[in-house]
Image (tube, rainbow, N blue to C red; front, side):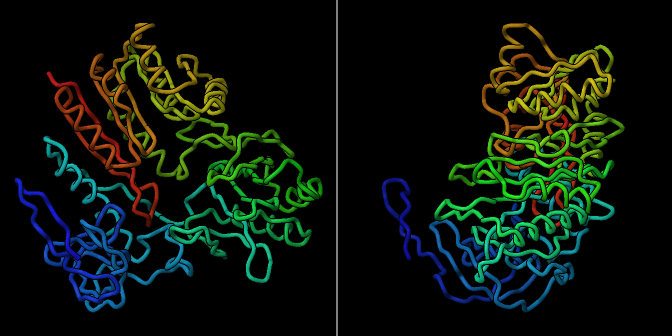
Length: 468
């Protein structure tokens, strides 16, 4: 294959040195942001999942693009000392924890290096990224599970996870990331569905009823929520299901039907109907109590979230005279943790249900110096600054993976708060945003925190101070 590049006024032809379905023996020179191995053939980049820096492998090229290609490991010729045998039966197909073949301590170093590489490529300030803060026990840490429901070849209901990059359901008997008790509850619900011959949703025909089983648990309280996502509003044998679940699992404090009749990949619909309990559970984080509803965001690893928030708040150095903005505040977790140190905290969140939960959480914890506002962060921030003339001393941001919008960045640069603490779940958009702030702010520290063990995901706390 040849690719043409315009250099000056002449086209130069570049021969792509690899071909699809060809085999090669190569050394892995690095790992990428998804944890995949990287090899170079005549300076042409090959991405190879399930390989580790330093290994020598035989690969098969499975896809070729103009600038890079993808391969898969056929044989490991020289294994890394950091390679380990996966302890998960579905690891090779699931893709959920894509670093399970690597020793845990090494995955922490990989995450630090991944953030460092992004810093070195993007920022003028080549700050040294700190070591990743890992978990003492990196297993069964998730407090939330969302299991797609389907049928097997025999027509029997199955529960599991989607195979990597597909919607084929892989049945799971045990997930080493999920809470064991909620997994037991979900299996019990699946057996009830099977015994009572309740229909299963079919994505292709959009017929059938049960789409997903979602569970949430308060790690500190052991309270469990069950959410059945259905393609309709009526659930057969609903009362009997409630009776059986609550009898067998007294930890289950609420059961909710979520109606999702749309042809969509989004798991939850907009309509919830509580069929048992109050529609929420509670958990404790850093000594505060939080109500958790079906649609509200709450960190899936609260053990590490506590450490993450403590680092962010400590580095913010909030005083009793400070006004603080908490952008993308969710149910108000970090807002309430900051409130006892600040004069006032404003929390902004687009999900109305989350804001209502945040207001209730403030009441539960007797916090009065915090104000939660529902709406788009870009618009609310603009209104607070430019219309209401509320100028913060410190801004805390924890945006979604897409990062900050351009208008919010401009507003931050306009008012120039003393400190900006940026919590990010996507280092790529983090460094992109930091590069736009470098002329006004000095990047003081970057601390990765491992909230998603054995996956390539990492949270990063970045602290910026206004330059003198």
